[in-house]
Length: 183
Image 1: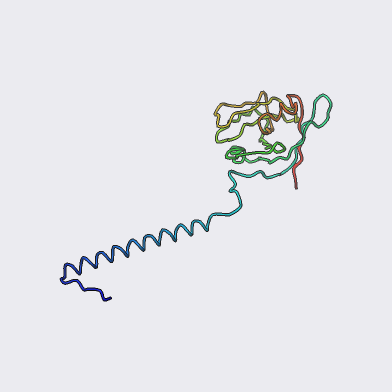
Image 2: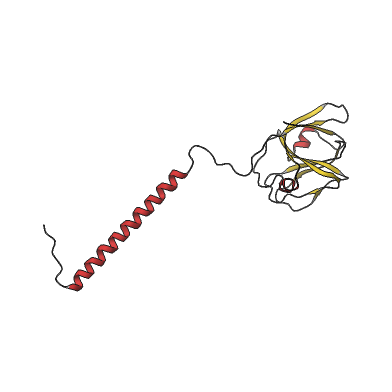
């Protein structure tokens, strides 16, 4: 069957516009399909995306009973010595294992104060003097809180562990810490 040619110029223009419009919509549909396919291919398969910074073991820390001198509990630690690292601390982390913690080593012993801004998990914040004696513990500091969590006395070290850790293992003021950094 042959296609009939429109009779006048106006009809020919109308037919051309309709063909162009149809072609435009076909091109748009193909572009959307292609973009969707490329996005689908770019999504990693079979692996959950990690959220927030991940724990990096840099040493080990022991909590020592002041009464018996026995090790109460040992944990792996990530160490923060530099000002920028200390100010970031546990921010943006979505989880921490029970056997993990963060050790902050300050420049000098003095009253220390921490907050929980941009922190997503409750923490026990343990303030330790230059002789490795625990001064005080701020238990279960709440995520996102801007309330100051302060030391009672001059702290040179601060240890952060998951909230409830100290109560669970009976770690108290006057107990001690010992730590060793990995090579």
